[in-house]
Length: 468
Image 1 (cartoon, rainbow, N blue to C red):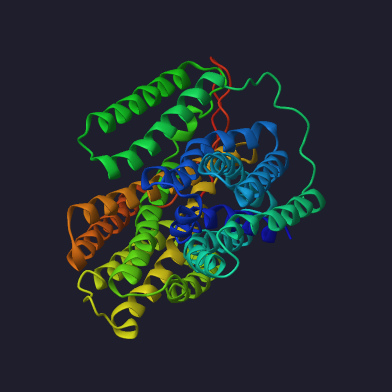
Image 2: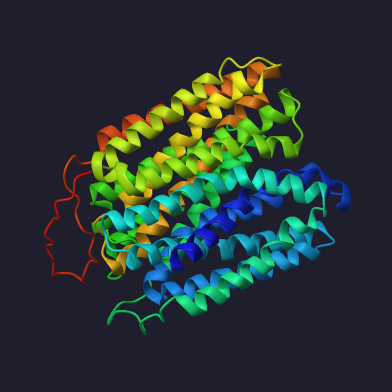
């Protein structure tokens, strides 16, 4: 039941990244808003989600995983209710921002709950495999759900549907999750300065990506946003180096396995989310599919991803190791994208599109769970929230970078050739991800992450011998 709860919560969070896209024309017509305002319905959610994930992960460690999951679900459900009754663009955008903040508390808490519920090894890998499959397919299912709801009950139900689901998940969490242990570890303080600088830096970075895709990467405003983000993130690094209770302990960035897993998550989700974004546009703008037909087409990716993720968590990681599975998964994703670099304007679904969709599902089902398994390998229970927050942040940042990159290519070109060029960009991201995984991961060992004590004492933790 805990696995069902965690997967359902993650499904709802990732689903809402994609579910609004198909409904945007109906929202624009109903509320009478311009394109510049309309985009904030998407940006507000992604901005808050990407900016607060890391903070949400550390809060789960310090304040309690169950408590943070319940808080996130309650905020998300309340914000969904507001969005579902919104009669103006301002209320809808504000509700989406609150929805994104609530969503940022959910994935780190859910993922860390799985990490402490299931024993490390085959049992945890199977659970994370299923969880990774849910993460990978949620965006594609969101396209189908949005089309069905928008064409049927209306766009308000894109948001309203979250409310009963959220209430059910809150009830499940209250019944099935054990109560959090009281209080923080003795003498540990919350790193307020680190939290403010890293959250502000991430918020500005995600916003700069959205701004650059629309206004140009060389514009003064875009460069100014990136510069401000760099200043805040640099300040965060300096604060962490001096803090007695850092938000991100130095032992975290010295753990090669965790760093490699986060890099892999960045490239995996950067390529996969961009593939779903670009593939959806290709189907509707070039192949002439309706929103519902587009969603049905993505079921091929969904089905193969679920099967591949189950096999990855249950068998492949144990036999081949995280490193080899990631290299294989991202290589397959690069091949699937390569198949679409020559798709004609009147392409046939069975011969031109279906093979790429099936192969991408297998690739995502291998790479997404493997990255999450790698991120949590050898991590102590007291640090699972931070590790989960880091890998979820890399998922969101990677996805934002991937979508921004292909959007820039589409803006600069026209017709089906623009899609061909954009697919080459995704191919490069996936291929670079495979190369990074092959180089960055250690071949045989991982090091367990322990919280850093206050100076000058230093703890040395034995390295467990787990093959990656």
